[in-house]
Amino acid sequence: MLIDLVAGLGTIHTIEAVSNVPIPDRTDIRHLIRTLTGTEPDVVRAEAVQEVPGVDLAMAATLTLPSGTTEVRCSMAAGPEITLTVVGERGRLRVTNPTMPHAGALIRLNGADPEPVDRLPTTFDRQLAAFAETVRGGAASVTGGADAVANMRVIDRIYQVSGMAPRG
Image 1 (cartoon, rainbow, N blue to C red):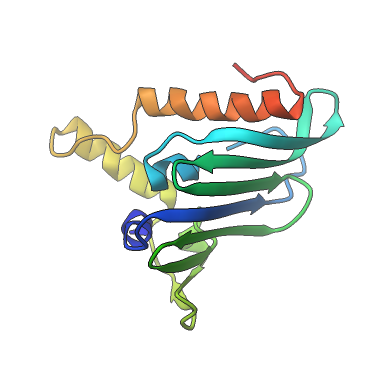
Image 2: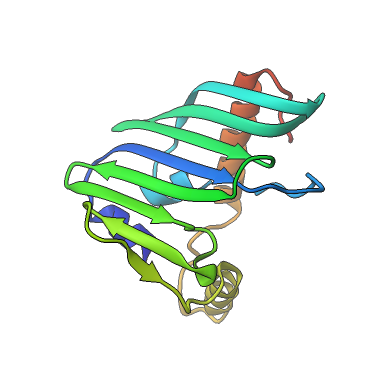
């Protein structure tokens, strides 16, 4: 659904993804941008806030795409705030809570009143259903091992640009 909405915006000029969720134990870390654009971003700036050496409490990064720029911010101390804003040649999409729509989300397209999204399966339910369909041979996998490796390349590059060691 989200991929289709973004595709309807035409050439993407900017994306801003924010994931600020306070995590008390700071041990669980979770790339939306590659999936939505189908392109490989280049990391041009990254800044980490480290609570202890080598552990990022917050990260802000600027990435370039073939058609524009992307800002990524995440924090395990600020928030809660999980938003996605995509600006394309044909419009603007703003989604509140894109990673947990089952808990309630709002979609605003081109400045219209926000449309509530609720009663959706969890993202984990959707992942399991897609996996089962792929295993049954009925659909191609949306993502796979190569995609996971490409995500880690971007994440590692963000760490490197911020002055931290890559996770791999």
